[in-house]
Image (tube, rainbow, N blue to C red; front, top):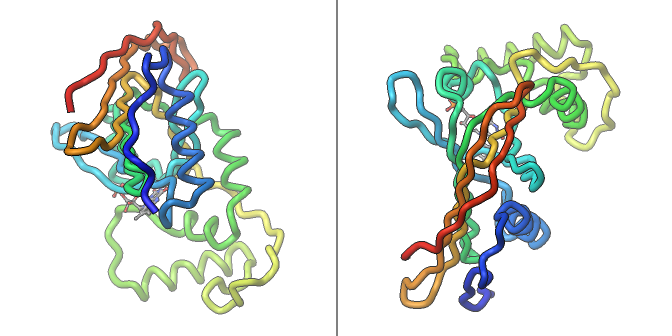
Length: 230
Ligand SMILES: Cc1cc2nc3c(=O)[nH]c(=O)nc-3n(C[C@H](O)[C@H](O)[C@H](O)COP(=O)(O)O)c2cc1C
Protein backbone atom coordinates (compact mmCIF):
# COMPACT_ATOMS: atom_id res chain seq x y z
CA UNK A 1 0.00 0.00 0.00
CA UNK A 2 1.40 3.36 -1.00
CA UNK A 3 0.40 6.51 0.86
CA UNK A 4 -1.35 9.14 -1.23
CA UNK A 5 0.86 11.89 -2.65
CA UNK A 6 1.78 14.36 0.04
CA UNK A 7 3.25 17.81 0.34
CA UNK A 8 5.54 19.36 2.91
CA UNK A 9 3.93 21.39 5.70
CA UNK A 10 2.83 24.86 4.67
CA UNK A 11 4.17 27.09 6.10
CA UNK A 12 7.47 25.21 6.38
CA UNK A 13 8.75 24.62 9.91
CA UNK A 14 11.50 27.01 10.99
CA UNK A 15 13.65 24.03 12.13
CA UNK A 16 13.66 20.90 9.89
CA UNK A 17 15.29 18.53 12.39
CA UNK A 18 12.18 17.49 14.38
CA UNK A 19 10.47 16.54 11.11
CA UNK A 20 13.61 14.73 9.86
CA UNK A 21 13.70 12.76 13.09
CA UNK A 22 9.96 12.01 12.83
CA UNK A 23 10.43 10.67 9.29
CA UNK A 24 13.15 8.29 10.51
CA UNK A 25 10.96 7.15 13.41
CA UNK A 26 7.96 6.57 11.15
CA UNK A 27 10.07 4.54 8.72
CA UNK A 28 11.36 2.51 11.67
CA UNK A 29 7.98 2.02 13.36
CA UNK A 30 6.34 0.96 10.11
CA UNK A 31 9.39 -1.15 9.10
CA UNK A 32 8.95 0.17 5.59
CA UNK A 33 11.96 -1.76 4.32
CA UNK A 34 14.49 -4.27 5.65
CA UNK A 35 16.79 -1.60 7.05
CA UNK A 36 14.55 1.44 7.47
CA UNK A 37 17.45 3.36 9.03
CA UNK A 38 19.84 2.83 6.13
CA UNK A 39 21.30 5.86 4.42
CA UNK A 40 23.98 6.58 1.84
CA UNK A 41 26.99 8.35 3.32
CA UNK A 42 29.20 10.34 0.98
CA UNK A 43 32.68 11.47 1.97
CA UNK A 44 35.55 13.12 0.12
CA UNK A 45 39.20 12.31 0.58
CA UNK A 46 42.26 14.54 0.30
CA UNK A 47 42.31 13.81 -3.44
CA UNK A 48 38.92 15.54 -3.78
CA UNK A 49 37.18 12.43 -5.10
CA UNK A 50 33.86 11.45 -3.50
CA UNK A 51 33.04 7.95 -2.27
CA UNK A 52 29.67 6.70 -1.07
CA UNK A 53 28.38 3.66 0.80
CA UNK A 54 25.29 2.50 2.66
CA UNK A 55 25.34 2.88 6.44
CA UNK A 56 22.92 2.45 9.30
CA UNK A 57 21.84 5.61 11.07
CA UNK A 58 21.80 5.08 14.82
CA UNK A 59 19.92 8.27 15.59
CA UNK A 60 18.85 11.69 14.38
CA UNK A 61 19.13 13.97 17.39
CA UNK A 62 16.76 16.85 16.64
CA UNK A 63 18.27 19.17 19.22
CA UNK A 64 20.98 20.41 18.64
CA UNK A 65 20.68 18.65 15.28
CA UNK A 66 23.02 15.85 14.27
CA UNK A 67 23.01 12.35 12.75
CA UNK A 68 24.82 9.50 14.54
CA UNK A 69 26.45 6.52 12.83
CA UNK A 70 29.04 3.93 13.85
CA UNK A 71 31.98 2.59 11.93
CA UNK A 72 35.69 1.84 11.90
CA UNK A 73 37.76 5.01 12.23
CA UNK A 74 40.55 3.47 10.11
CA UNK A 75 38.26 2.45 7.23
CA UNK A 76 38.29 4.37 3.99
CA UNK A 77 35.43 6.59 5.16
CA UNK A 78 37.11 7.03 8.55
CA UNK A 79 40.32 8.16 6.89
CA UNK A 80 38.45 10.47 4.53
CA UNK A 81 36.47 12.02 7.40
CA UNK A 82 39.78 12.74 9.15
CA UNK A 83 41.15 14.37 6.02
CA UNK A 84 37.96 16.30 5.25
CA UNK A 85 35.52 16.30 8.17
CA UNK A 86 32.41 17.09 6.16
CA UNK A 87 29.91 14.58 4.77
CA UNK A 88 26.49 14.15 3.20
CA UNK A 89 23.87 11.51 3.96
CA UNK A 90 20.78 10.59 1.96
CA UNK A 91 17.85 8.49 3.15
CA UNK A 92 15.32 7.13 0.68
CA UNK A 93 12.06 5.67 1.95
CA UNK A 94 10.55 4.59 -1.34
CA UNK A 95 7.24 3.33 0.00
CA UNK A 96 6.77 6.56 1.98
CA UNK A 97 7.70 8.58 -1.12
CA UNK A 98 10.26 10.51 0.89
CA UNK A 99 13.89 11.50 0.57
CA UNK A 100 15.93 13.20 3.28
CA UNK A 101 19.34 14.76 2.69
CA UNK A 102 21.57 16.15 5.42
CA UNK A 103 25.09 17.48 5.16
CA UNK A 104 27.52 19.22 7.41
CA UNK A 105 30.67 18.92 9.52
CA UNK A 106 31.51 15.60 11.16
CA UNK A 107 33.07 14.99 14.58
CA UNK A 108 33.73 11.79 16.49
CA UNK A 109 31.20 10.90 19.18
CA UNK A 110 32.32 11.12 22.82
CA UNK A 111 34.21 7.93 23.76
CA UNK A 112 31.74 7.14 26.56
CA UNK A 113 28.82 7.19 24.09
CA UNK A 114 30.68 4.81 21.75
CA UNK A 115 31.52 2.58 24.73
CA UNK A 116 27.87 2.39 25.75
CA UNK A 117 26.68 1.61 22.24
CA UNK A 118 29.41 -0.98 21.66
CA UNK A 119 28.51 -2.70 24.93
CA UNK A 120 24.85 -2.87 23.86
CA UNK A 121 25.65 -4.82 20.68
CA UNK A 122 25.38 -8.64 20.47
CA UNK A 123 28.65 -10.35 21.34
CA UNK A 124 29.16 -11.68 17.79
CA UNK A 125 28.89 -8.16 16.38
CA UNK A 126 31.38 -6.93 18.98
CA UNK A 127 33.80 -9.71 18.10
CA UNK A 128 33.40 -8.97 14.37
CA UNK A 129 34.16 -5.28 14.97
CA UNK A 130 37.25 -6.23 16.97
CA UNK A 131 38.37 -8.62 14.23
CA UNK A 132 37.77 -6.57 11.11
CA UNK A 133 40.32 -4.05 9.95
CA UNK A 134 37.59 -2.57 7.81
CA UNK A 135 38.56 -1.65 4.23
CA UNK A 136 42.02 -3.27 4.48
CA UNK A 137 42.71 -6.14 2.07
CA UNK A 138 42.46 -9.72 3.33
CA UNK A 139 44.05 -12.71 1.62
CA UNK A 140 40.96 -14.90 1.69
CA UNK A 141 37.61 -15.41 3.41
CA UNK A 142 39.23 -18.33 5.21
CA UNK A 143 41.98 -16.07 6.60
CA UNK A 144 39.35 -13.65 7.93
CA UNK A 145 37.42 -16.45 9.68
CA UNK A 146 40.65 -17.79 11.15
CA UNK A 147 41.35 -14.35 12.55
CA UNK A 148 37.83 -14.27 14.01
CA UNK A 149 38.42 -17.62 15.72
CA UNK A 150 41.79 -16.40 17.04
CA UNK A 151 40.07 -13.37 18.55
CA UNK A 152 37.39 -15.61 20.06
CA UNK A 153 40.11 -17.75 21.67
CA UNK A 154 41.96 -14.63 22.87
CA UNK A 155 38.86 -13.22 24.58
CA UNK A 156 37.60 -16.62 25.73
CA UNK A 157 34.29 -16.48 23.86
CA UNK A 158 32.59 -19.48 22.27
CA UNK A 159 33.48 -20.06 18.63
CA UNK A 160 31.09 -17.55 17.00
CA UNK A 161 30.76 -19.70 13.89
CA UNK A 162 29.99 -22.90 15.78
CA UNK A 163 27.84 -21.66 18.68
CA UNK A 164 24.08 -21.79 18.03
CA UNK A 165 22.64 -18.44 16.98
CA UNK A 166 20.13 -18.25 19.81
CA UNK A 167 22.56 -18.95 22.62
CA UNK A 168 22.70 -16.77 25.69
CA UNK A 169 24.89 -13.70 25.72
CA UNK A 170 28.08 -15.11 27.31
CA UNK A 171 28.41 -11.93 29.40
CA UNK A 172 32.04 -11.49 28.47
CA UNK A 173 34.00 -8.32 28.48
CA UNK A 174 34.75 -7.53 24.84
CA UNK A 175 36.30 -4.07 24.94
CA UNK A 176 35.50 -1.49 22.26
CA UNK A 177 38.52 -1.25 19.98
CA UNK A 178 39.86 2.32 19.94
CA UNK A 179 39.53 2.31 16.16
CA UNK A 180 35.77 1.74 16.23
CA UNK A 181 33.15 4.24 17.31
CA UNK A 182 30.58 6.85 16.46
CA UNK A 183 30.52 9.93 14.34
CA UNK A 184 28.16 12.87 14.62
CA UNK A 185 27.27 14.64 11.41
CA UNK A 186 26.05 18.10 12.44
CA UNK A 187 23.30 19.34 10.14
CA UNK A 188 24.40 22.48 8.28
CA UNK A 189 21.93 21.86 5.45
CA UNK A 190 18.81 19.70 5.26
CA UNK A 191 16.56 18.91 2.33
CA UNK A 192 13.15 17.31 2.73
CA UNK A 193 11.62 15.90 -0.45
CA UNK A 194 8.26 14.26 -1.02
CA UNK A 195 7.19 12.67 -4.24
CA UNK A 196 4.41 14.57 -5.99
CA UNK A 197 2.06 13.60 -8.77
CA UNK A 198 3.38 13.90 -12.33
CA UNK A 199 6.91 14.47 -10.99
CA UNK A 200 5.79 17.70 -9.36
CA UNK A 201 7.66 16.87 -6.18
CA UNK A 202 7.73 19.12 -3.14
CA UNK A 203 11.19 20.10 -1.88
CA UNK A 204 12.57 22.48 0.67
CA UNK A 205 16.10 23.20 1.82
CA UNK A 206 17.18 24.59 5.17
CA UNK A 207 20.69 25.90 5.88
CA UNK A 208 22.37 27.34 8.96
CA UNK A 209 25.83 28.56 9.95
CA UNK A 210 27.69 26.32 12.38
CA UNK A 211 30.70 27.68 14.27
CA UNK A 212 32.89 25.25 16.23
CA UNK A 213 32.56 25.94 19.96
CA UNK A 214 34.98 23.28 21.24
CA UNK A 215 34.76 19.63 22.31
CA UNK A 216 32.98 18.57 19.15
CA UNK A 217 30.14 21.07 19.58
CA UNK A 218 28.99 23.87 17.35
CA UNK A 219 27.23 27.15 17.92
CA UNK A 220 24.29 27.23 15.49
CA UNK A 221 22.75 30.29 13.86
CA UNK A 222 19.00 30.13 13.07
CA UNK A 223 17.91 28.12 10.04
CA UNK A 224 17.08 29.75 6.72
CA UNK A 225 14.61 27.96 4.52
CA UNK A 226 13.59 27.99 0.88
CA UNK A 227 11.12 25.89 -1.09
CA UNK A 228 12.82 24.54 -4.21
CA UNK A 229 11.53 23.64 -7.64
CA UNK A 230 11.35 19.92 -8.20
C1 LIG B 1 22.33 -2.11 4.79
C2 LIG B 1 23.78 -1.84 5.10
C3 LIG B 1 24.13 -1.31 6.33
C4 LIG B 1 25.46 -1.03 6.63
N1 LIG B 1 25.75 -0.45 7.82
C5 LIG B 1 27.04 -0.13 8.12
C6 LIG B 1 27.34 0.57 9.32
O1 LIG B 1 26.45 0.97 10.11
N2 LIG B 1 28.64 0.83 9.58
C7 LIG B 1 29.64 0.46 8.72
O2 LIG B 1 30.81 0.73 9.03
N3 LIG B 1 29.38 -0.17 7.57
C8 LIG B 1 28.10 -0.47 7.24
N4 LIG B 1 27.80 -1.10 6.06
C9 LIG B 1 28.93 -1.46 5.15
C10 LIG B 1 29.33 -0.22 4.34
O3 LIG B 1 28.42 -0.04 3.25
C11 LIG B 1 30.77 -0.31 3.77
O4 LIG B 1 30.90 -1.49 2.99
C12 LIG B 1 31.83 -0.34 4.87
O5 LIG B 1 31.54 0.56 5.91
C13 LIG B 1 33.21 0.02 4.30
O6 LIG B 1 33.15 1.28 3.68
P1 LIG B 1 34.45 2.13 3.34
O7 LIG B 1 35.49 1.19 2.81
O8 LIG B 1 34.03 3.13 2.31
O9 LIG B 1 34.92 2.80 4.62
C14 LIG B 1 26.48 -1.35 5.70
C15 LIG B 1 26.12 -1.89 4.46
C16 LIG B 1 24.79 -2.11 4.15
C17 LIG B 1 24.44 -2.64 2.79
